[in-house]
Amino acid sequence: MKVVLRNLTKKFPSRDKKNKKDVVAVDNFDFEIPDGKLIGLLGPSGCGKSTTLNLISGLEKPTDGQIFFGEDDVTRLAPEHRGIGLVFQNYALYPHLTVKQNILFPLENLKGKEKLSKGEMLEKAMEAAKLVQIDELMERKPGELSGGQQQRVAIARALVKRPRVLLLDEPLSNLDARLRLQTREEIKRIQKETGITTIFVTHDQEEAMSISDIIVVMKDGAVQQIGRPQEVYDNPANLFVAKFLGTPPINVFEGQVRDGRLYLGPDAVLPVRGAVQGAVYAGIRPEGFLLRKDGAFCCNLNGVEVMGRDISVVFAHKASLSPTIRAIVGAENLAEISADAGQVRFDLKPDKVILFDKKTGERIRVDMKA
Image (cartoon, rainbow, N blue to C red; front, side, top):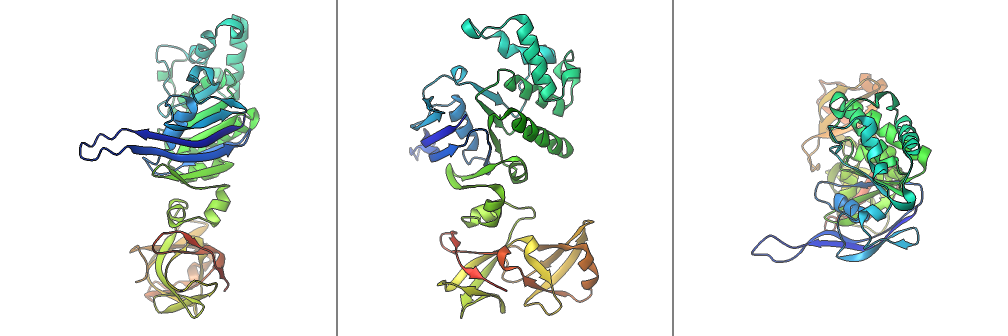
């Protein structure tokens, strides 16, 4: 099911007695979600991603704009008539009911032509349980399940009616690290098997990038960038997107472009082809550093963290906006680093260096070559 958001806006009345201006939670969101895709709404707390999900579900009414499911305008349609499945962060299971009864609950409330026989309901409940691999837990109650199992029950309950659109509101936030990894893999598998258009809300960029076909990065109610995860990572539209995506985060420096070269402090690190001149922000991804004894970029070495396959070189530079800089290099380079030297030198990978306007934070498009 294709979902179209057309100039979607949501404003809330201000509670500030001195400032009566409305709070804009979602600002002119315009986007077409392709049929059968998994979309990640990504951003920090308060950016408007959950409000957007609530608008799509019908739990909130938009101040302006329209919502379409396929060709149907559902903007003013009640949630129960939209054909959605909704999974909450806190599972929202009925504690006094068994797993089977929780999954059956949406089917038992069907009326009219949609009403099913008891046998049909049990068959659909078992199908949903098998899809999320909890068919052996049907007689247990939520209190007897782990967090990951409870979340699977919530997903099965949302899927049992075969919704047109599946909405997931931070469904992994209450799970520990290992369960989060396992459950997000399950969500991706389930979405692929069912082909249901799915919208996944999270503040965790690793989650969004790992399972989404397309990510939507939001800030202060406004869309910052939309694209495939790797495209957004490699080509961020602005400094906010660049800093929000990536673990470890991008390293940002005060830079200068003059005479066709990028300078970080006194070091001329890369040639720059383009009209840009003067002060810029230079973002360098952690994997963008190449250890070289005669490298163009000289930094003060703080230490080395061995992580198995890779090592993290921790260093400092006067031009950095952060007191600590991290470079990720292969473990085979460990022998090249002398902790007693006090300094470390790098060359930079041009495709991992991104320039931004210092005033607006917008990306500056230039051609850089080593």
